[in-house]
Length: 93
Image (cartoon, one colour):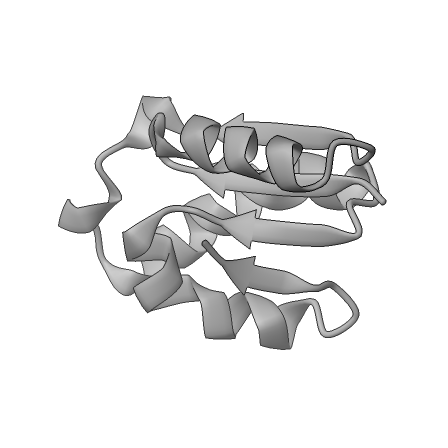
């Protein structure tokens, strides 16, 4: 069971460490978008677009679960992502 973690900054690394402790047998893939951080100053459409682009490697690697560790992406994009990818298990950190 491969688990993906996304954050726009570095906070996803801490979330990934916790996941690795809880699920030591599961590979954890972490992606971030430091190039475009902070997300908090962006429009809803921008956050949705950037988050969608950022999670593509996690989808391509067929992560069983994708954890969104970015607060702005959770507030602005998570429901949109769940509708866009209904078969993906996208959760908030």
